[in-house]
Image (tube, rainbow, N blue to C red):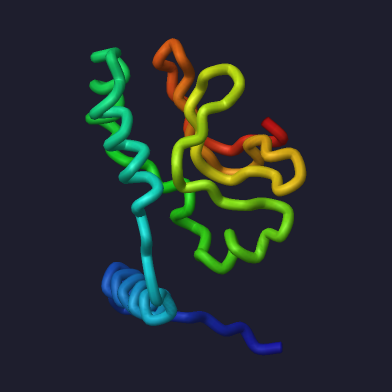
Length: 128
């Protein structure tokens, strides 16, 4: 079999062109981006937290979108979970909003929890 080689005159230009092309192709598939869940959590902490240290961390990091790599269809298609967008007061006194198990009503999936002591957790819950 004959030996072959690929010669690229301007590798940096080729890489840049490929990145632009891929980004344009991906963006053509996006129909809607909704960051409201993360923004509302961020605003809740800044408006309601009594702890300046927590507010400072949130200001430095900015809103975090847990659903960034998911579509609304991915969330709605999960038959075992329901999405609660309003804060729910849990037995512990904590506030929770996010995905809950339909049967147990416990946090299960992506959620945001504010504990009575002011601590905040945003992430993935498994059965509470």
